[in-house]
Image 1: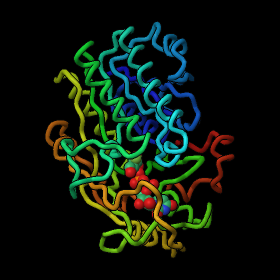
Image 2 (image 1 turned 30 degrees about the horizontal axis):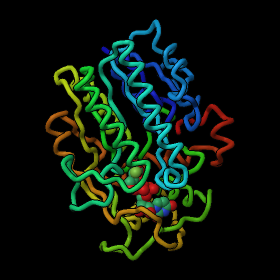
Image 3 (image 1 turned 135 degrees about the vertical axis):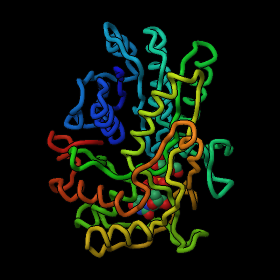
Image 4 (image 1 turned 60 degrees about the vertical axis):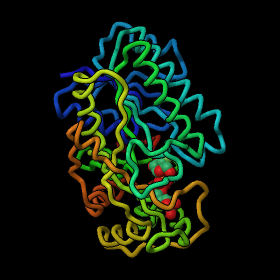
Length: 340
Ligand code: UFG
């Protein structure tokens, strides 16, 4: 069993990772600056409150502790925000990652699982995106993650770092039975916005463009359950025991669902007709983003359990439905509300 440091373990995907590792007998420590994560989401390990942009804080986080591996979820991850505030994205996602890698090197921690993203590919040039697809990010968020992937390749060569970068497509779902789910103070993602509209909370739902070259005119996305993402990270730990070098894998279910599909499925799961209006396209949205995860299935032995859209949305629905009326104030003030 491993001692794992989860950087960003108070966030949405990081908290599900902590739950998975604890359930499978690993020991977890969370490092988080709590800028978007939630103290109440840290249920499966101790918290080190530290910022990756503070090398002294990182030094003391590693000092006197012994980790077998690090999982790195700390990131700014909103595409639109990254276009408006590129320096913040490069500082956090690039410099922060570099600081973490340097602390790992100094303390001889030699294995890293890194959160990457479909945004490294930019506008797709094929219907299904495998790992060999050209990488041409079209926004600072994707560019910052691609730079960090490059660090990992260079670190493998120079320092013998073993790493796995996992490029998520659209992370979705929740584990309400464990009290964790998706709760961002500024929510931009489709499924939480649809569910909040179903609950009569939040702003009215907008469909960003219905004139794309798809069957119903709305964008297609590949939704993958956050617990399946956690499973892939855990498999990556074993993979790094057997393989040197820097490796990348795409994670998705391989099926594209439109914005209308998501709204219709959420309506059926919740039993609520969900009102929406059609708005102009959102800048930077590709029409279709669908993963090939054959490599992860073959080499990691990844077998997603949540392969249908309805159960993924249903898990998120149960999480959102059972929260007190949603507001950023609640999330930060009430430790009984978990996840970022
Ligand atoms: N959408 C709406 N209304 C909303 C929110 C989203 O119509 O209120 C649409 C978007 O325009 C898009 C689809 O729903 O067509 C999915 O949007 P999300 O914001 O939920 O997710 P993205 O596809 O934009 O994000 C994903 C990953 C990012 C990655 C990005 C690359 O989550 O990490 O793809 O384009 F950077």
